[in-house]
Length: 377
Ligand code: SAH
Image (tube, rainbow, N blue to C red; front, side, top):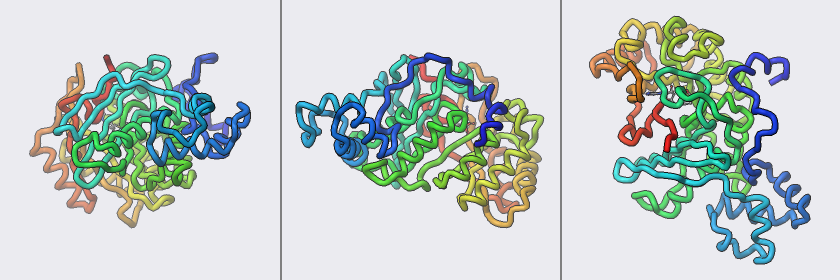
């Protein structure tokens, strides 16, 4: 984005305070060339960068003892330079017979974040955090209640996925060894308010091994409240990830309340940006809509939602709607919709030709479902 556009976003991106300590630099923060340069700056052989990358991204090794192709005398130095420890698991909670695992992590500066691994018969999804806390203040979301602590680094984001990949590869999750097939940026934080680090993480996840994890961009979903300039920018990155837009209301009056950033970017502007994203990337956008009883679940709002999605003049199936039954959060005055109202909402959207699904509420019994991540000890 050109610099002159930055001021518009400043209040929500929040400059990191000067002099604050940065997370340790890790190979996942760096391009392949930068990894090599960094070793050479430290007087270490540059070609070792590739070996370290192979251990990390291809072999999923995290124990230096197993990196036997590195000279024993240099191993510690090499590992410290490119594979420093980034986070410590404080607690894991399991549901669905161990196929849903929520992990609470402590970062180097004490910041706490959570990630959730969800294994299904046909795929394994890692839901990752991109910020400690969140500055978007959506009143129905637990993460939004305590504000933003800080942005996470690219490597801190990637390491959540790698932790899941290692657990799956080692057969620690019931169902036999497997890989991470999907990554969703639906944990704590607003990914597009930490744009650079998030795009860096997307690149690391999709770069071929051993430069990155070698995932397909199709398998990666970035979910946003709708930071319009950032959505436009993301469309130009050449990594066609799936975009999910947390809309939750089709009218500005209600959306201003549910997703406060709407006072800056209106429903019409936001939906238009999402449509342009679909046009550019040829990826169907997902509209997320948390169903709140008596708040946003009226039949007329389903009709209005269809109108809003058609207002783009789209002539192809650019969008689908994913309804999320509202998950309970502490102190929230709202509850999930009546199932009959939910069915009617679905029926009205489908009658207008909009594919609509209802998300399962995996992990809600361990406060690991959408909007429940609060990262408290
Ligand atoms: N900040 C990004 C990423 C978070 S994704 C975003 O808002 O898109 C988490 C998804 O769960 C978002 O769609 C969010 O609006 C939704 N959500 C938040 N609180 C929820 C709750 N209590 N019940 C159901 N969904 C919720």
